[in-house]
Length: 455
Image (spheres, rainbow, N blue to C red):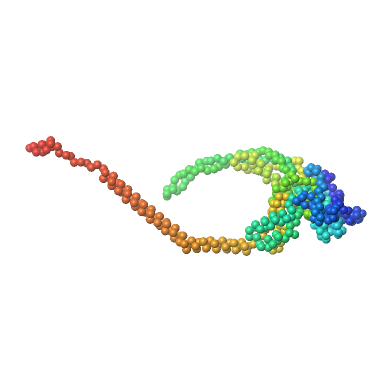
């Protein structure tokens, strides 16, 4: 825990050249903090981290320097112990805090970063400077993901995304072409691991079908009919669900909308490397604005959603009702990490819009304005096209042909009915005429004898 809460440890410069300010002056001006700056041993120019070569690059002479980083495993810190220690440190911390002043190692000028930043460029000579975070926050970052996407790649991704936005104002594309608006930033995040045990009470619903007799009117007569009705049979249940959560990620910044930073995933957290200032050289870096205990409350909401899904699965049946869930957390740990993003911002009609690109895989999320003029013209064009199509169809007689076809079909049907009637009548007559007639009795010789010899 001492490594996590070492608020008195000052930042050690990793520059190949000595800082202009002496240690005596730093001790004299306690509000001045030391900082890291990396210089080229060949030409003395500034070194910045290159995502392409994944090392330090001198943009002046092109020399490359390997990143000096340790290979120690990424350590998880106990959450409950950290919260207790934070409470003590906050109680013992001075009520008033002086503004931390940074002395540029190149030009010697004194300046300060924003309250939420600890790395950036000197405003006087553009020298990349990285300051420590211990002067501003109790918890310091111990791991990060380096940039993999260069600024040119990010600009291309950004321009393609902006160009694909429908009904966007024309000014939006003009802003997207301004390279100075796209800045590489390391954003602070918390990750939480926890083993949860949840006891629940609820009801399991089984669907069954029942036959129901009802009264209705058919052809003017009231009749009784039978229909099938679905019903649910509820049974009380109780049980327990055990889940393990690994690396639940929570953004610790307030400068970007949460709807944006929450959709930059996935992050390849399995590739985290130990924190080193060399990875940050040439980029901005923020200090966390969401504390570790506040972040855990957000993580609990994410965990609770998955816990309820598991409870419903454990209840089973066709339907589930959850009456109560009591969750206990055990072995809860956390990490403070920095993740790389490219961010662009501009104002349109006095409103700020932010765009963020994942510095590892190029996933882009952002806000966008809509041009109501373009939307209005589009709706007008669609309406005009529909009316024009209907007019052309009317001129071509499409609707009349349909009517004629219907009338013709009606006549054909009547003719077919009449033909069928006469054909059936003819068949009936032929059937009746084909019946054998009763023949008259033919006289025999006996009949003639009797008729002529009667008295």
